[in-house]
Length: 332
Image (cartoon, rainbow, N blue to C red; front, top):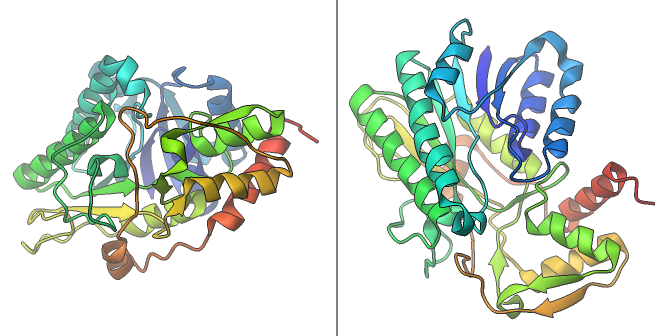
């Protein structure tokens, strides 16, 4: 079994690759190692995969460059695509919208074309809980309308879902979109709150607390995310004309992957501070543009169809991250 995996040097991509490689599967990995955050972290993730030797093939390229993508894939064969690569980050989309158009729209379209022309068995792709915007009904269901994104990042992820629906409808391409809910854990992303807050607390610095702490997030541990991806990967949506999660009648399903346990921001900070063994110094700030008040995943569809059941509460997962962080940066 060979999987083509984009974003392999990213947080989720690295964790998924490691799990699949450990099972003896072959991975063809794509990443452009951009500098949205420190590329040294991405290179360290790739170094962590080198123990798997010949099972791993790496291509450093931008999948938004179709000529480069086709040239790199000319001699590679694969059964499935897991498309996790994207320009991430809600707030950065306010500063550099062009990066999101190029990577998340052009790049996603290129991966759809690659899947179509190679007649790929199944393409699983990353969407985001950001598509729900300021939804007022909780928990957030894949059957909710998501027509009012509050950031360009969210808009591009919704557009990816629409393009995927079209390819499933026109070409019968099996597609599964996964809306991730605030993923955290070892090897996480330095632009996200778990990393930022841990770094600040250990350094005795002040952490910004937006909307005066009146936010809730469905924090999902990386191992639970990987379990959900793998569960969906080998079971493409059926070609039976029945309605799929997300509303499609084609071979396209959309699922939430979350922890189904929203946590208040102040409790989140308390857990990190306890794991660090330090006090958290906080600066209360107003709501940020493009942010949302609450995320809370309805995971009934993925639980019913694949037996998905998150196993890691924040009280266990955050100490795991803090332990990894200290080890990664040699903090005693």
